[in-house]
Length: 172
Image 1 (cartoon, rainbow, N blue to C red):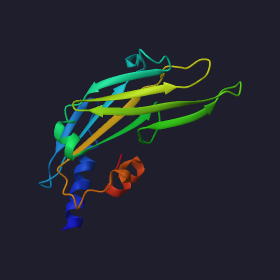
Image 2: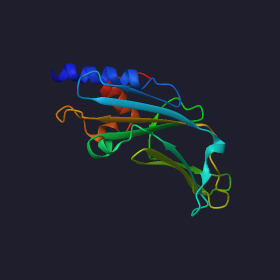
Image 3: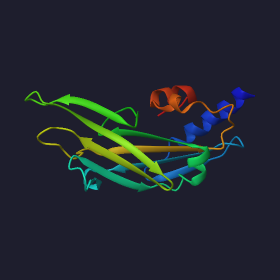
Image 4: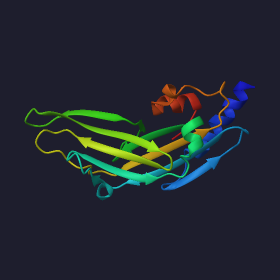
């Protein structure tokens, strides 16, 4: 029974993860799981400079699938792809780099969510010339609720998109 239910959940996630940009899909195929996926694109001019930190940019998006019930009994997974990247990466994500003068710095993407919204943050720690994101950033927000507790994998297992894809037999 567990395998059948897990297979159903996997199929539901496969279908829901193929949603279009700036649209949400909801599926409730197994009787106890509601999974919603929302995808959107953040273009370079969509970022707003943080009022308190000149190296951080933010983008806020209303996401109706993040409800009080999700906050209490469900989970939210947030993944990103920047530019022409081929794989989804779970947030937070930090990339370490070094410029031509030997200065080490990092670029960091993080996500914060609350009821009804998600905020994506980008921070560039370059010591002399921090930059604003200059590539399109693709975001995928997955919410799930009312999963039977015995079937719900730990949140840690989904922190890496490749692991989640493998566990749930997902296809990009």
